[in-house]
Amino acid sequence: MKESLEENKHHLPGLDDSCWLLDPSSNAQNEVNYPSLDRDKKTEIAILGGGIAGITCAILLKKKGKKVTLIEAGKIARGVSAQTTAHVSVFQSFLFDYLTTQFGAESAKTCAESQLLAIETLFNLIKEYNIECGAKRSNAYAYAVKREDVNKIKSEFTACKHAGLAVSYLDSSPLPFPTYGSICYPNQGQINPRQYLLALASSIPDENGSSIFENTIALEIKENEKKENNNASNAGIANYEIKTDKGIIYAEKVIVATHFPFPSNGLFFARMKVARSYALGIRISDELPDELYYSSTDPYYYIRTYQDQKGKLVIIGGEDHLTGEERNTLECFQSIKNFAFLNFNVKSIDYSWSTQDNYPFDELPYIGRVSKDNPHLYVATGFSGSGMVYGTLSAMIITELITASDDLISKSYKSYEELYAPYRLNMLASGKEFFLRNFHVAEMFITDRVSSKSKVKNTEEILPGQGAIVHNNNKDLAIYKSEDKSTHILSPTCTHLGCRVRFNHAERTWDCPCHGSRYNFDGKILHGPALKNLERGIKENQ
Image 1 (cartoon, rainbow, N blue to C red):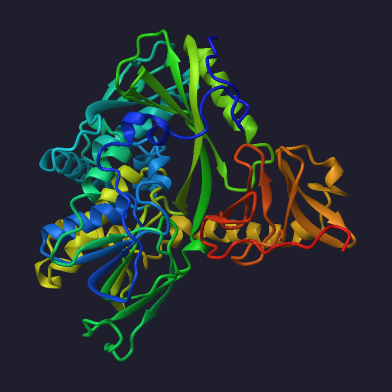
Image 2 (cartoon, helix red, strand yellow):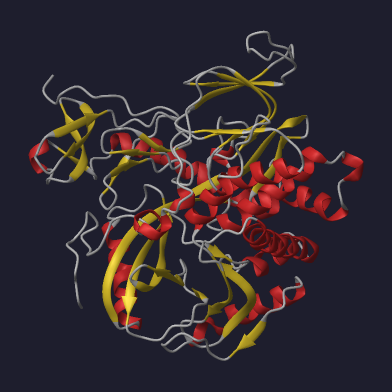
């Protein structure tokens, strides 16, 4: 193997972040430093979150004549939407066989129809706004890794056909290694998500009141019972007050598109599991058609190509696991590396990164009104690793719900609203996993406090660049030792609901196994549902 780059923190050659963030061609001319909120503001629609769902919502609502204010805690298009591998595809881990069994044939058809419409909407937006983002229509292939998996592939093929997808069954696939049957999904796609979102976002701010504010952290969403305020300079009717670290936004409607919903309306943390997924960007000497590929394994590997400044890059993702529950996350990257070397002639590994995805227990995202009784608060979450499709679909559904009166919403959108409703309750599809998962959370809450399995007695046992829970003087501390051997001492208690965090060796983060909150080595919040940083700990001997 030709290694032109030194090892990164993942102990792999290459750069330790996504190609969308590190490839110079991805940081297009649309990279803008948007201001922070600097005063109280009134708006028609407030959108929290500057990723695929939030930005697309803003664009579609503006096209309907609405004034929007989008706020992002950091920089837009730099969160989960910049860590995705950006498959624009209806394939999601053999979804349609599951949906047909658990929800029925009509629900499977509705899901397929809505996803196809979202894919067309995304590519239509690319054309309408003349966006250069490496957009390409591709076929997708779900392939059997071994002969025993052929029946699994055929069952999903049958379900896809019944759901109205124009799929075909093949005895192999275009991959340069043996496969044992595959489903071909025509006219799917792939894009550079960062170029796409930066270009879309550039069309949001205008002189009519629509705006983007970066580095503006939402702290609280408060329903305004009086529906009236006199604090903003342009005072008027407002259903909600969004308190931020920079001021208050008064809004008639609020869309929460923050990957994990903020705040905890709907108890989504108890209705989803949160998983990490890993990716490598490699160069190969094999010929590989520019299509999308998904293995029959569980968890499955997913493959696509991308043209960066150096030529064709092959992006391989997989090794998904529940956040905080993998003891050695470095092995996840190593497993993908092993898969790559087993199946391709690898010349180099140029990128390695990971991402975080939310999976509802019934496999369908939560899109729409948070509750039936609240027509002004909307949410988009639980995209199950398919953010490009479900993020776009979220914007379409929410825009329709906001701009069309109930009696004018089309029959199709009525069915979409019902299928993806955040307040739905399908005990047949999700009840067992709901109870098992939440029982496991309660179990971890207790065992991580009393078990010494993952704890060490002092910092001398911690290697530079690593962290551990140190049990000392009857007190547990989360301690990270940097490369220069200085220590960062934190409370190991997650600020969400009090579970104990665990150290992620590959990412050098503290991850909560209960509901997926993540913090950097110094305790700063990276992923919700937690809203606060880890507390600083006292020194070991104090």
